[in-house]
Structure formats: C-alpha cells, structure tokens
Amino acid sequence: MNKLFAFLIICWLSISSYASELAYHISFAPESHYIHVNLTLNDLKCEQTLLKMPVWAPGYYQIKDYPRNLADFAVTDTDGQPIQWEKQGKSGWLVRNGKQRKVIVTYRVYAHKQDVCEAKVDPERAFMPGNGVFMYIDGEKENPITVHIQPAEGWAHISTGMEAVTGSPFTYRAKDADELYDCPFLIGNHLVVKKLWEGHEYEFAIETPDGIEETTFFDDIRKIVAEATKLMGEVPYSRYCFLLLGQGQGGLEHANSQASFTDGSFRFQSRSHYLRFLYFIAHEYFHLYNVKRIRPIELGPFDYDREVFTAMLWVSEGINMHFETELVRRAGLASDEEVLDKMSGFIRRVETQEGHKHMSLRQSSYDIWLNFLTDNENEDDVCINYYFKGPIVALLMDIEIRRLTDNRKSLDDVMRLLYYSYYKEKGRGFTEEEFWKVCHEVAGTELTEMRRYVDTTTEIDYPRHLAPAGIRIDEEYRLSTPKQ
Ligand SMILES: [Zn+2]
Image (cartoon, rainbow, N blue to C red; front, side, top):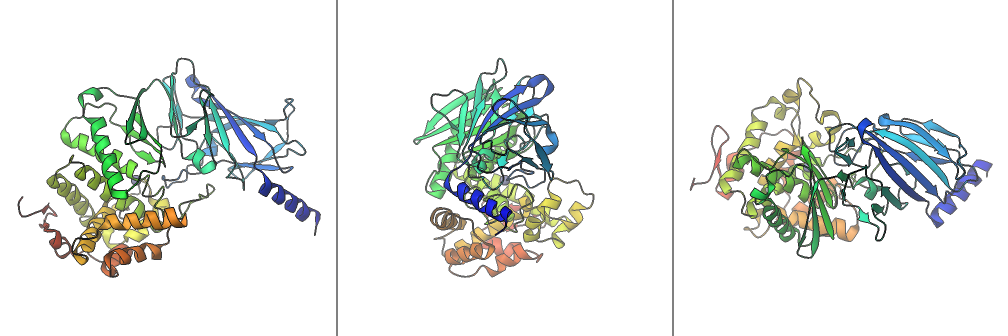
C-alpha cells in the first residue's frame, strides 16, 4: 500500500462517516451586474478539496461553460490568511487546505445574460439559477448546503422553490447539490401572489404583472394543476413556485418550481396568444412529473461536468408536449378544434421539411447536444425537432393504446406506471427497453409500429392511425372530426 493510497483510504473512510457543509452568502452589485459569492466550507475531510462548478443545467441540453463568468477566485483560512489553490480543468479549483478544516472561498460572477439558465442582475432585480453561481465539492454532491441572500438595497422579495430556514430571514437550505441547482431565485420587487390549493402552497412571482387582474390566469392555472393531479394521482411537493420573468423566450422546469419568460405583460393580443401561454406554463409544470421524476435513467443523478446523452428526450419533451395540450384541454380551456389545429401545425412542420427523411425521433434526442438552439443553415434539411414530431407520435401512441384496449387504457397509464414503478418503487429512471416494456404492459401487446416511428424515419401512415379516434387528415395536414 503506497502512501497516496493510504491517504485516499483515510479520506474515503472519513467521507463516509460525516459530511462537509457548504454555507453560501450571496450579495449583489446590481449596477455592474455582479454576484458576490462568499462560501464557507466547514468540516473538510482531506488536505486538498476540489471545488467544481457545473458546465450545463439539467433541462437545457447545451454546454454553457458557466465558469467563464467567474473572476477573483480566492481562498483564506478563518484568520484571513491566503490558502493556495490551482485551477483544474475548465470547471475545477483545487484548494490546498492542508490541516485547515474550515476555509472561506470568495469569487464574483458576471451575470448579465437573458436566459432561463443564466443569472442576470441589474438594478431592478436578480434572477439567479444556481448552476453558474454555486460550486460543490467533487465527489460529495450529497453535502447539505445553506444559502443566505442579502438583497440589494430596496429589493423586498425573494422567491424560490428552495426550503426557507425558519427564524433566519433570507436563508435557505438544500439537501444536496442536485436540489441546490434545481432551485432558481428571483430577487427584487416583483408581485408575489400566494395561493393554497388542495393543501398545497403555490407562490407566483411575477415580474411584469401588467393586466393580470383582468385575466382568469390564477383560476386557469388552478384548473391545469387539478387536471395534472387527477392524471397522476398525487402531488409530490408541498410547495410549488412559478417564477414568471419579464419579456423573453423560454422556460425551464424544476422539481417544485419553474422559471418562465412571459410576453412582458398579461395583456395578450388575442385568445390564441393567451392559450399559447397557458400551454407553455402547463408544459413546464407537467415536467415536475415528466423528466424531474419520470425520467430516462441517464437524467439523474447528474454529471455536471459534461454532456449527458440519452435517446429518450422525445419522451421527456415530446410526450410532454402531448400532455401540456391535454391538461389545457381537459381543464376546459382549449376546444377540441383548437387542439386539432395545434397538432396539424406540428404535422405540417415535420412533413413539409426534408429533415424527417434523414433523422429519427430517437436520433434527434441523442444528438440534441449538437442541435439545440443552433442556427445551422441546413438544419431543416437533415434534422427533426422532438418538440414537433414527439407530440405527433405521442398522440398516435395514445390512440393505438386506446384502440388495443377498447379505450380502457391510454398514454396516461404509461405515465402513471412509469411514475409509480420506477420513480416511487425503484427510485430511479428507466432504460429505453423498460420504457417500451411499460408500453407493452399497458397496451397488452408490443407497440412495434410505434417504436418504428421513433427509431427510424419510416413515413407515418396518418389516416390509418388517426381513424380509430375519428380524426381525418387532408392533403394540407389539416385534422378534423366528422362534426367539424
Ligand atoms: Zn420541456
């Protein structure tokens, strides 16, 4: 046994016996768009501590290289004496703490990007997802973390899905790094509306609430939440937070919150604009089941150092598009005609672009790291998007399962079985084979043809698959039912 090995064993033994604690103190320089981070590391076990910052954010399948925004990294002991450190790779900082069990790390993060997975600080407010701000100790992601936030002068509210520490204002607690990175913060003077629905707390943090009192927004969300609960059979959180940011694009799902940009006002131009907004909020909301809990096995626990490849994002995103539509329809907020129109749009989009002959739904999932929000010139010629083809296949699967079971089962049962047997019983995600096995179990037979539509570029036989639901399709890909 060499000395290094003996040292590693001692480190390992102590790691398994108790956890280090990470205590963050966060403050802001709003005018210059900086977040100041002060991290106290307690109960360090080893003489060297490798701190890591993620390079991506779960749900946003693109390498963001967050450490590029970081400056002035420094480490001291409790007397303020400097401690040596060195950079390790693009997202690691190796701290040579020696016998020191407690050290203080400081750095600042430039935060001025408009994105659901990037921090942005300005004089009005701070939006702070954790991935580009917080670090974790390599190999110890299970360590508990506390975050104390010092709002800039004049900022009154902090909204987040993270648990507040009772008796300690502006202090929050995450049980591990995954929870830390899953709870973005909105800090400022946004409108805060709290609701108690069916024993669960809801917080709406709305940056630009102009016109909201003239809408039925809160009632509509309540109906959507009720439909999701009916579908899945339980609500797996005690509190859920809607962070509704100002004008912008995109949203990001979390286990008990969502961060979603809005039109910048609640004065929607038309009913269809409002409906689109409801679909979008329902989409991010349903993700709390589908992807945060019902998940491909690769998506958690997360490797924050590199891309995480899975061929099943069409399940997490494409099937989610199906359920965003279903929740809004079942809540009585969209008519059957509006839903068929939406689906026609997806079919037209897929079928009129050359890409559907060259990339399967499965491949589009796996290769998302190459194709997410890129502006490749030839994208439509060689790629498809699982946000469009995914809901088409999901609808066909739903119809097929209903046909095979005399309407006793549906795609709802697939989601429920995945949730209860993998998330709840086994406490893990599912493999591709397990996904199809669950479909088989629900339908009573293998969904061979559906799988072919996922795994290959086989042309979809729309008339035949839509007919059992009484849906017709014309040469312009318009969908209709006989009464229309
Ligand atoms: Zn999504």
